[in-house]
Image 1 (cartoon, rainbow over the protein chains, first blue to last red):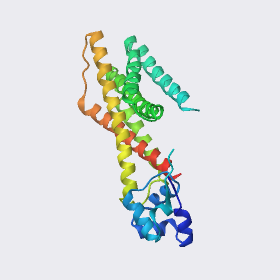
Image 2 (tube, each protein chain N blue to C red; image 1 turned 45 degrees about the vertical axis):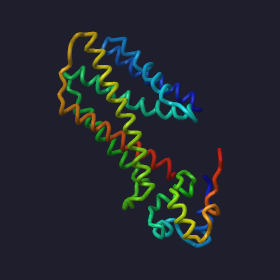
Image 3 (cartoon, chains in turn blue, brown; image 1 turned 135 degrees about the vertical axis):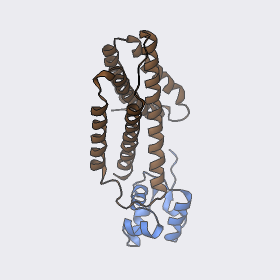
Image 4 (cartoon, rainbow over the protein chains, first blue to last red; image 1 turned 180 degrees about the horizontal axis):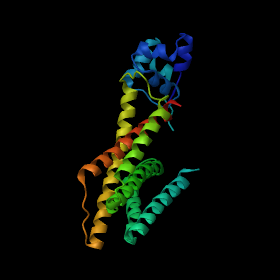
Length: 65
Length: 184
């Protein structure tokens, strides 16, 4: 699954640490999601979308292999 | 190197390990065990991405298998008393692993879903390799006791510590490997 967290983070001028603190997760979680190596839970995906005031599909792009 | 070649390499290492063990213990039937293990892995890996699953299971099983060979060797040559060097070696390896991978492990971890995911996955990996480790020890000792008609006196305390250290080492190794895989 691809995502645009890095883009949105840059738009809001946030570091990975800042975003992690705002979402109540570890910095490692943000790093792994941004790199596309870890797919977040639905709850966290909604939390991220809500934080950036966008729809979930604006941030996460599902790719069928 | 593609997956099939990696598989061949791992199987070759397993056969080499069991070959050395069977030569040292003078029991050629031990060589049949990896073939049985390969058949079991092939049987267990079903569904989509079969090759990947076979590869993953083979790596995990091989780790347990080689560690099992080590413990069997230790049991048979108990008179040499190689518990302490093995335990010392494992402790040093765990220590080195902690030092090398410390940059990937958070200093003040927040228990969130990613950390849980890593813990669950490394726990699963450690469980698979520990199962293979225990099966290897049981089957090897069974074959050896059937062929030589002798039973091996096992000092429970030392071997429990040794096996526990191996399992902890595996868990730490898988945890660090997963951290590196996800974060680098």
